[in-house]
Length: 563
Image (cartoon, rainbow, N blue to C red; front, side):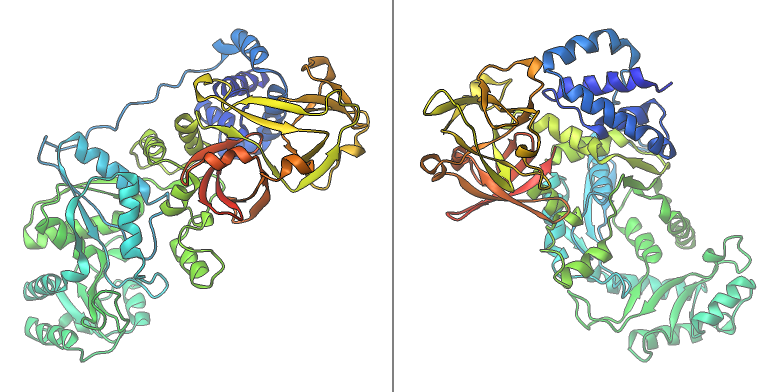
């Protein structure tokens, strides 16, 4: 049963694991494991937010004390180590394949089959083949030349170990033609000239078309005419003979070769007859000695067609494992949409964070080890799963938690604090509160400070409130110094800050942070970030983890990682 006490317990547990700051999505993920349904989120989300805010408002030591009596309320979910065993698998004999379609870079969804295949071949000391599945595809989902470079980059980023060289289907057209002719000679395929409308009606009515009645020799001649370019796109197709009474209309005499007049990125206009997925993979899975095929549940029909073709050629069956669709809460990923946005210039490129490409995740500082753990934890089954994005971020936080901490002030507003007892204040701040070995940083200030102006809300409008400049001192709504020591009874709102006086601002760094929605946060950072190297991941306090992408004399450019 999910109740208030259980929500508080999970919020406290998450806060203690992350230096006193719980995250709503992390608590939500734990409740999913307790049995919370997607349709119940709206009933619980407000209460979860309230309890997370309440927990985050108290010091870490107090969180630990409150958690002790509640710890027994929550389940300790054991994470299964590794994946379930493969059927019909022998050590050293497993051969699997990854088969990306080059219409764009790999995204977080494509990482799943890549990682699962890699994990299994490592588990069985087997081989993993990298086959670029670059048959011509549809006009809506066009092949792009950039993908031939971007996809291997993504595989290497994920540390997927595959056999080299890469195999390109576009290099294997003559092989497919050979087996296209053989299946026609067996009387199991025919060249069809019927229109799409005729095909649809015949399937619905379980009716064979007149083209199906042609002799083998007539079909072989028509097949050769297709290869010679006698027919234009849409005028002739090679169809496999199944049963026009099959219970599934989509299985009835499916197309296995079609004509396309579009130019291919690699072969240009050399070929105009292309195999469909069913046929090309039936041939390749046999010729490449694949033992186990891992693919999405949406390709079950293609799996049945492969088995049908293997029987025609008297080839042995392979073991096929289907996985359910993986979706991430609140994130819509589409290669075709991404391609349009990049081509139109609305996205900055293939590493734009809105694409969720592996290149964009790398720029943001999402580590490949976190992606792998996230994928493996989901397991292998045919259930469709929707997971909170914080499940991925949670794995990443574990790996980057030791990141150094600094101040960044977005949308800076200058304030002046009155009645400060000293001419100059010096803040000596640990680079990480839990790892003293990282050292500390120093920030000098006088009486003027930059703070973040959030939604136009200024401190001056909150006269009765108390505030605390982190690691420095407290002041009140009248902008008057209150004291250096932290006092709980003041209930002061914590604020990160930067010096704004003329003497101490000369070394502040103009900073831009690209957010996951493509927007840019602009502001200033403390001078201590000058020691960072490009590619380093840090945490801007009270803002989030960020990865330094580029540094120059004029500005530093970061990508936001996550909270």
